[in-house]
Amino acid sequence: MMSPKRIHHINFIVRDLDAAVAQYERTLGVDPFVVVDHPLRGVRAARSRVGECWLVLVCPYDAESVPGRFLAEHGEGFFLLSLGVEDLAQTIGQLASDGIECTDTTARAGILDWRVADIGKVHGANMQLTDDG
Figure 1 (spheres, rainbow, N blue to C red):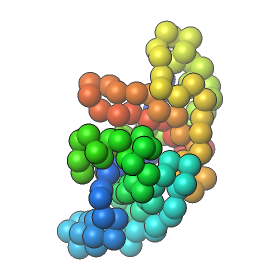
Figure 2 (cartoon, one colour; figure 1 turned 60 degrees about the vertical axis):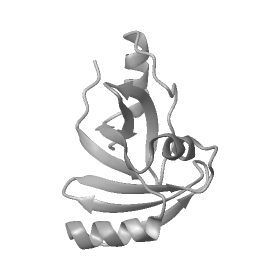
Figure 3 (tube, rainbow, N blue to C red; figure 1 turned 120 degrees about the horizontal axis):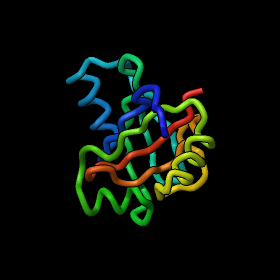
């Protein structure tokens, strides 16, 4: 059975990253966001720490990417919840042995040095795992 240790990050999808960063910083009073390019997903992303969790704003520039298609279909707002696990490969393997089909069967590169794997939708919400080590 999977045992997440914490919420690692929460992603919101946005159309205008600069405007969203300014609004989140002004409205929530969070630390300044750090902006990175993530060409493997066709997005620019901004992250800021909120307690033990990261708040991530995702702005697709590739309309055919997963985030780009999500934005086109659903508009701006909540995109996914990522749970931190101690050993991502082991957790993916455990889910498979428990008969749970995940979107990703291996870890992939996330922003910065994060390793992530999409689980899929759980009660309508996109869920993901992130190495917490």
